[in-house]
Image 1 (tube, rainbow, N blue to C red):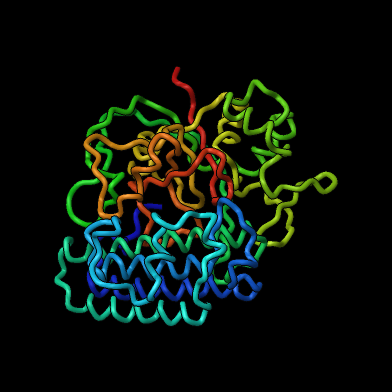
Image 2 (cartoon, rainbow, N blue to C red):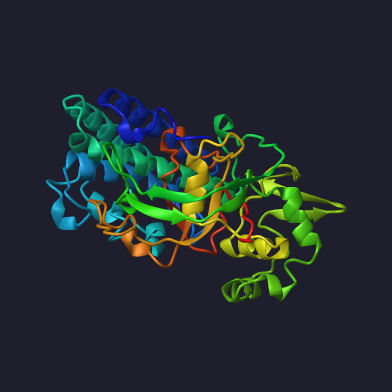
Amino acid sequence: MNSSPSSFRNASPQQLAQSLRHARDYTLLLFDCFAAAGMDVPARVPQLRIVNPPLWELGHIAWFAEWFILREATSSHPADGNGNCLLSRGDDWFDSALVPHRSRWTLDLPAAGALKTYCHEVLDRVLDKLSREPNTDEALYPYRLALAHEDMHGEALFYTLQTLGLPAPVAAAPPQALFAPSEIGFPGGTIEMGSAGGGFVFDNERAAHARHVAPFAIDSALVSNAQYADFVADGGYDNRQFWSNAGADWLMRQERSAPRYWQRDGGQWRTVRFGELSTLAGAEPVRHLTLYEAQAYCAWAGRRLPTEAEWEYAALSGHPAFRWGQLWEWTSTPFEPYPDFAPDRYREYSQPWFSTHQALRGASFATQPRMVSAKYRNFYMPERDDMFVGLRTCAWPG
């Protein structure tokens, strides 16, 4: 899989208008999945560190578009927007930089119907304004930013459906990914990391810079459930030598002897997918792993995780056997700024998370195709496993 030809990064005004409509329809579709389970009211949503109340998410997504497009904010700082929110207390409710996560369950939010009306009104005004914009990167930047933001929150809502054991929309059901992995050797060399030229670029992708990559060998595909089950069967979760110090500390705080959602049923493994128990498909990529579990598997297998640079080299090589895009993939690289980093208008997107988060690459079945890019840097805390994330391995040099 390569970058989508319909990428939002270079979308024209007409393409953006279509994508913004699609994104909002999808947001509302996902919200209705929660509403059907009675979770359209924050008080009925489990208060977990890795989720937001869907009602808050709905308002926040529309507020973000209003802030950067309609109110023409030059940054995410509260003083840098123009005019008043269409909702009288919208800034107090939905500015994620100012509203602590734990408080989002107790805010006096409008009802779902009122927030849906707000979503429609913001989108109508956004599309009207977009129809008068020139087809330039500067003019279209806030629209592309708002679209990317909504698509990322849409994927997060999809994770939340899995976390809370709720059914997923039928149209977005995960595909079966069955394939036989092999190892690919690359000669290495100098590559250009980061992004240059026109179109939308996330701030953590700037600036383009040369990076030397030594020769390396990497799996063509992700580690499968069957491969990971061999690690589990060999006592992988009980053997301290496979775990880093941080991983061992994490494991001591868990009651876990297999990946999240795995359940032993006699001689086979079963797993929970969107609230339903099913037989674990051995050939599918293993998913819902923490960085620590991915590292431990690699140590057991005598392998290692790829660096960000190695992953990008392989993904952009055009090698027909290198398959990616089924799941996010852990890399061995901490999430750090590229040289000469400077935050963009959305100041909180990257900068607060450097050094504490780990870089992931690829995409998942819940990622909108227009977001897929070999340059896209995702990032999560090492202990997160609610995402659709797996791993592939590299050989050690020599």
